[in-house]
Image (cartoon, rainbow, N blue to C red; front, side):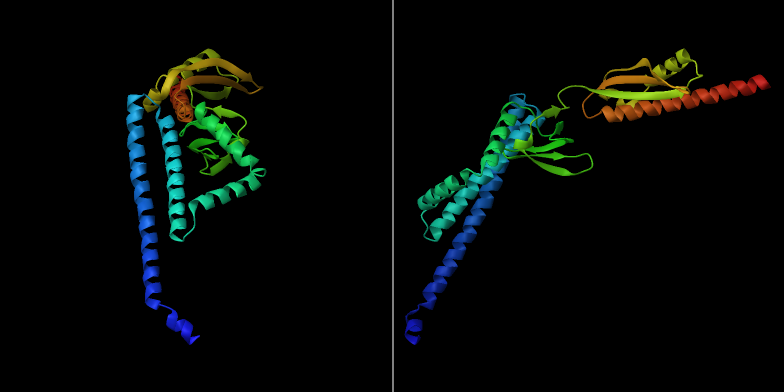
Length: 275
């Protein structure tokens, strides 16, 4: 035992250990620096492409995120290869081993292949872009990221859903054109319809700050439904996508204010008549 300790060169081991740790630290620093520089270059490149080639902001953001992910994968593979060489492992042998293992599990990875193929065609056919309001896999929300394996959708309640691309069989994109704002107004059955419709139409002409979001209308279609005590009048407008709810709320507010004003005028006229 003592002979073995004597033969052991503690200084050499310590030196080798320090050298190895230094190389690991430098490798990780190089990885993070290269990734930061690469991400910055990618961001600047897509910013120029968006201006020069007239690419939409959503499309540019989608491709930019995908390119950054690919960069991270490539740099990660290089880092792993470098670390393997530091420990005396042959990268060629690792790749060959990975190929054998990949072949062994390939039959069970059909879902992953389906994810990648579906994600490729989602991007190629421009079905969705980052920022689009969509309905996919039974979920409504705004697309935050489109990848080759998963698509991330943020619901309106704040939930972020990670959807495997193979589960996306139908895509309903609500951001590829103008949207409809629809408001139904219920008024008493006894009210004069011509007067009420005229009042609602006039109220819709004064919508203030939301006018910039309106592409067409608002227009009063007329009576939509009848009950024994109420008449429902429908109003529609065409708006920029993602602004239909804002316009609907403003239309309701304007109609309510107009009806309140009319009620006050009628009350004042009634008081004058009594006098």
